[in-house]
Image (cartoon, rainbow, N blue to C red; front, top):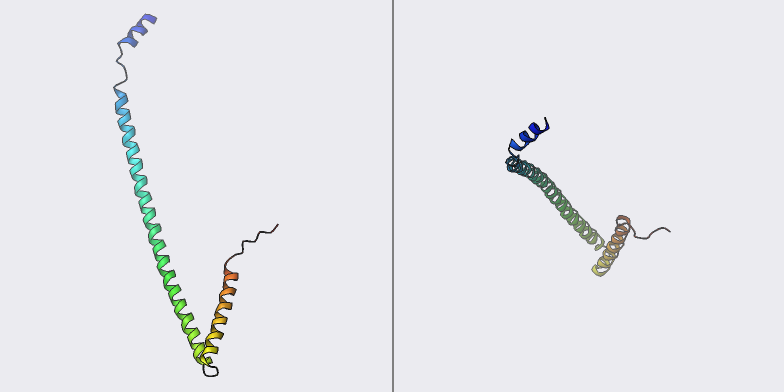
Amino acid sequence: MESNELENAVKQPPREPELPDLVVRALSDFERIVTAEARLLEKNLLTAAHTLLDRLYIQSVLIVMGAVGMITLIVSIGLVLHHWLPWWQVLGLLGMCTIVAAEVLRRSLIPSTVSVS
């Protein structure tokens, strides 16, 4: 019986012709996976970019509005103080108040880098 099995094994064609088909299918599957992942990444990146631009636009508008509000408030305080003081005193007082306010805001908004031992 062993001789018949050996003859059948020798007579069977080799399976090498199937290998190129398998490689082509594997490469085709890999291409489809990479294409799908690229589309998904592009969609996610576009969504994130649009969200970032929307936030950036809103924040820039808020910053400009806040700056204009602060400038007009400082000018109005200066004009009110000018009724009682000369301009040089008004500008000096407003300058000092602005510097103090900036330092207070800096210390309250920016965390310190001092480490506790």
